[in-house]
Image (cartoon, rainbow over all chains, first blue to last red):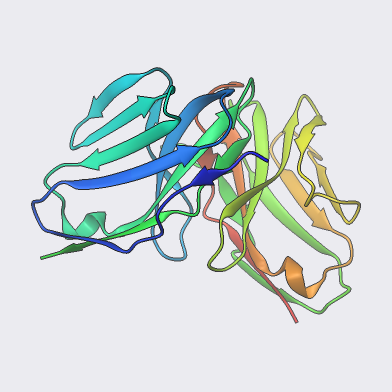
Length: 111
Length: 113
């Protein structure tokens, strides 16, 4: 069973702080890793993708991947109230892009 | 910016009825997907489609489900005899390549009464 686990939250941070979101996955064969943002009642929106160990930065977002620990994280710097959403970790296995999603972490950024 | 479009945005149907959900993927994408999300639960993979055939499907995608690309633009999901537990948001997604990023449509909410 290929599982992707996330703390459901809510994770509450003040505006301007760093939000740290974590995800673990069970399949060592996982190849591609994604963070999606989902507002209530809306579709997932891709925030970041990461394919190799280390950090990948894009604006206020940094994704971190550690394949040995089967762990992927997302840091959001200078958090804004508009960042309040559910963040979904998603993983692909072997070749192909069938995504397995985690249950999501609800982030609340308070003004 | 190109986007995946889905219709209808919301459909209410009686149990046992057939439903067809429609999607127009991004025009130069080659890989197409259906996912669903039951309210309050995870987004779940249903099926992937490439070169006019199913490439992968999950355990959820049983005989009551089918997919079709009837012309060069539409990609449809048919549920033959809906059950109460089919009530969910159904998302279509497309990708330009096998390992590429998925782009999701806005979803079709299906309510089965």
